[in-house]
Length: 320
Image 1 (spheres, rainbow, N blue to C red):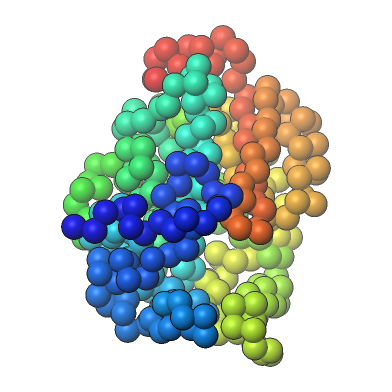
Image 2 (tube, rainbow, N blue to C red):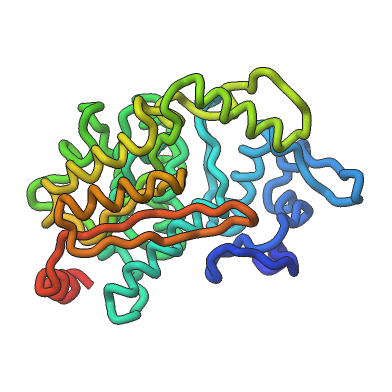
């Protein structure tokens, strides 16, 4: 059996120290795990085995190989046209969330099904629940609006019976709501997570997809294949991510006793100040900005809590 360490190359990385995806992909080892990946591999001008990262089918095959090799996921697929997530970056969010919980638990790592996480907009790929349960054995609820995405996520669960009872999909019936209709009156979550749609319009999403493909291929192009970029609901919302996160913060007030840490990714650094200001205005007890880095790309997530110190202590005693 190929060992995980064979995938990792001796290359400096800014990923979280516990992230398994430091260094370049070892395509030979990955294709040994998933032979189907070989169809998309070629040797580049530098003599390295690689694949066309602008090809949606190739990227999907790479994800299947990564999930099977590192996380023992037997089946993973998404319908054409849905967002294909980069596994290393998604895993980084999970690892930093684990650190956030540990900081709230006297430095002790919190693992196991007692930790309950809500993934807002889990999508067709179900990637955060898969990674969070595989790495830390957390239990997950994934909320989702899109019926086709829900069916895809449920199919992933059906074909990976090891996640039975560990990951639950809940349809969101009201597109104007985020936490309402999902968090039940007697329910508590240690974390909520979200990768919000960050473009403010379909046109901006198209430009972003075109730029992404151009950067990957080095070729000028007028319009990217939308199948590469994801569904509209995954990529854009009216007003962009700032409006979405502001709505999330406002609604979190109604759930402040039901969640220890609310968190969300923030794609644009210029949105941090207005987000911090709104968090202060709604009276959060604590807020944090946690930076992450994948190569030259800097990302971050914001975390906030309404719990007072005595409430935190009670939560830790009862749940952790």
